[in-house]
Length: 291
Image (cartoon, rainbow, N blue to C red; front, side):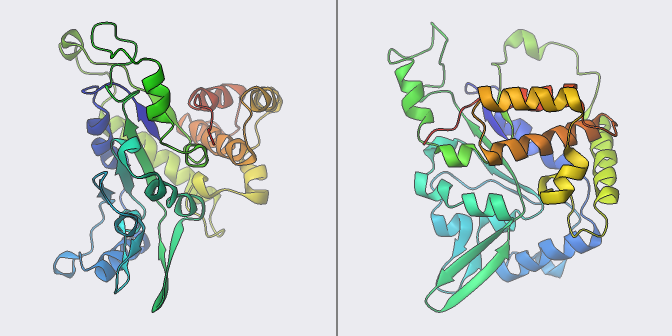
């Protein structure tokens, strides 16, 4: 997921809250996470935790810090976040080569580090959550706070993130600024506990559906399993076909839309992916990939 919005809109806060609505690690998942932490030397007192990892490296992080490396090869942040959340704040401020090094892990769920004295593969099945301002000044579209270079500054700033990486991000969410009046509003009707319960139910459905396949969630669906479980009904197929042409979706983007629509249907408790689920999935993919 990529959140785009002005400074102070709550992007970092929302990202940090995400692990709180995710299901606890299963015993086998907790063992996987603990093994990575043990190799990295970060396992505290040999204790195995059931909480999902949350890693938020600074934008000055090197490629080795993010994907792994060193003289004695160690896991990087993308592996330390395995089965959890990797949060990249100020996404365009990362070096472009460092960001592009995440393309393989996001696609395969693992990262291979090759060195002269070692060739090691670490697990890296993460939920990538990124945040960025719409432009360098952060106030694009605000006549009072925006800089004089708009909209050119927005294009220059957003072009720091490559098209192939954007194509691997399923959800593009615009975050509106928060005013003082918004802070005075009553709390939402649905709290984190209710959302977490809905996520647990949807994940249980996915686990049951994929039992025996070696997969854990819709994010891993491909091939025949993707066709079997994520193919929309006829209205949904027509909408997706039209949108794929209009939005110039790549084959990867098309597949990812099917996975997102299947997940939206699971959260809604629907057995079949319908047009409404496809429409919602497409609404989250507004940014056209760039070269």
